[in-house]
Length: 196
Image 1 (cartoon, helix red, strand yellow):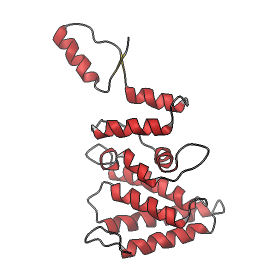
Image 2 (cartoon, helix red, strand yellow):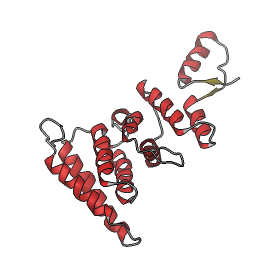
Image 3 (tube, helix red, strand yellow):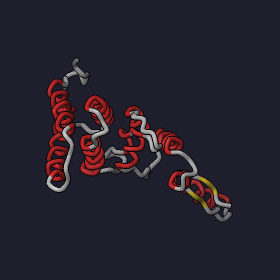
Image 4 (cartoon, helix red, strand yellow):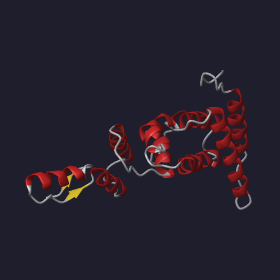
């Protein structure tokens, strides 16, 4: 019978120690991902397990733009915006260079999600602000937070301008960009607090 484990090396060490053949094994993380994809469990249940594994610094957790989107908005028919659930993805670990994720890749995933937030007409500017704050407070980098915010906005604006050449984008996009730009400028780099 297969053993559910995230530490197959333990099974190999046990095999060497006991001289008994190591049993077949299966990753519990991979199993839960498949169960979610087959709609046997909810995304929130999957997200809880993801948060649990990342709290133990488990390696090789798969993270996509869609995962961030589902964490922030849920995956049900009724959308409930909960940007605080982005923390469950544990960006300080799962997007860190020490974890094996190059800065450019981590930046690309978060920027891709931010662009979706800015383009989506259903997301109001104040909610986009909360999501932006949540994303950036957890983003792992040694860069100055004000510089990081400017980088995210510049990339987002450039990509939105490119997208706008092929599809029509609503009017709230500019309102969101203006709000996030204002917030970036009044952000205090000295103490990392939002200034009212």
